[in-house]
Amino acid sequence: MASCVACQHLHPLGSCPLKRAGVEYCGLCGLAHYGFSRICPHINSETQVREMIRAVKLSSEPGHLKSETLKYLTGLKGTLVQKKKKEAEKKAAAANGSANPSAGSSAVPGQQPFHMT
Image 1: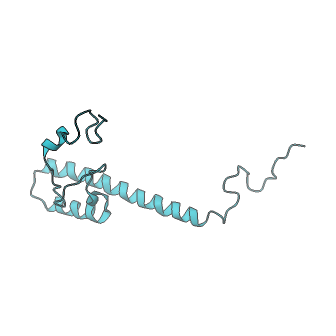
Image 2: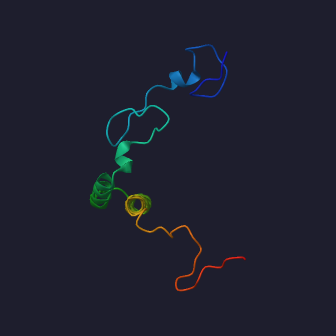
């Protein structure tokens, strides 16, 4: 018997205890998220997160729930924006990689390089 990929325990093939838990459906998109990444793809979309923020602001939920949710969603949106900027910078650096040949050197601009003789 090999270790189960889902629960990391040893058991007969096809009798994982996690199967008994049933399927959980996402409250955002209505689908069941399987696999290694169980996160809803809507959480990775800046547009969807903005819509969630708008919906929470219009919600009639208690104030403490709304504030905690807005705190989480605004942090998530900030993370997505930063990730997008880093990817754009990485693409720009890759495109300009050959344009700056001294990018990896430690030379000081305007100073002659040191050579041992």
